[in-house]
Amino acid sequence: MRPWCDGWRRLVSAPAAVAGVFMFTLLTALPLALSLRDALEDHLGSSLAADDAADGVNYDWWQEFSAQASGLGTTFTPSVIGFATTLDSVSGLLDERRLITPIASALAIYVMGWLFVCGGILDRYARGHGIGAYGFFAASGTFFLRFLRLGIVAAVVYWFLFAYVHEWLFARWYVTATRDLDVERTAFYWRVLMYAIFTALLAATTLVFDYAKVRIVIEDRRSMAGALIAASRFIVRNPARVAGLYLLNDRGRRCGSP
Image (cartoon, rainbow, N blue to C red):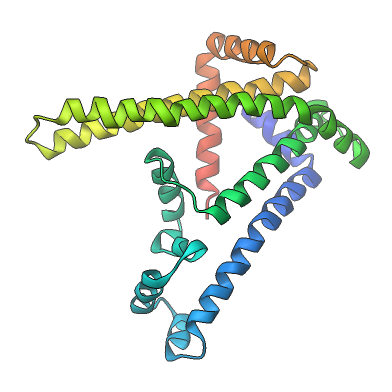
């Protein structure tokens, strides 16, 4: 619990960094929200359905809109309500659902922006005191190219997981294990097992690259291979603490989800 509490203390002590990340996320998502708003407004117009939609959920109109929607409009489904958003995102990730072009473009912009500011954020938290705007952007610029190189390695690893491991688990092993089954519940358990294995692989990969970023900043490493090896060694030597911290952070994110 001590590292987790210390992390929260450092987070609270840097409200500008938190506000900056929030604004960056908001500005990235805002064009998508405005585009979807325009699509909804064009479809509703001044019809009676517009009044019903303003008063509450008009499921009949929603079905009509979904049937003719294209592009970003196809994402306006019941899964956008509450915790269903999180479940739909997880399902899309595990089932390898392709992103539509507008969301993929926004995600690419967000990832590149995050690679830039991540170095400044980690440097600020590592120092434990204010570094000012100049210090923040100087650190961001210093670590950007290193994180970009690390990101390329991460992209290759994630590509391998989704292109090959996902196929091995779901298109081969799962099919082989359930081919002769006549009990649907057993097939469901096999499916859950495949999800668990793939989720564990994704989580382990994320952990290694996240800890590598920390080692790069704290130890001013220039070698991405060295940072990955050091991160892997730390995780192997402290599996319980790392897993506990990961679960606490994951629980915090889920509790904070709208």
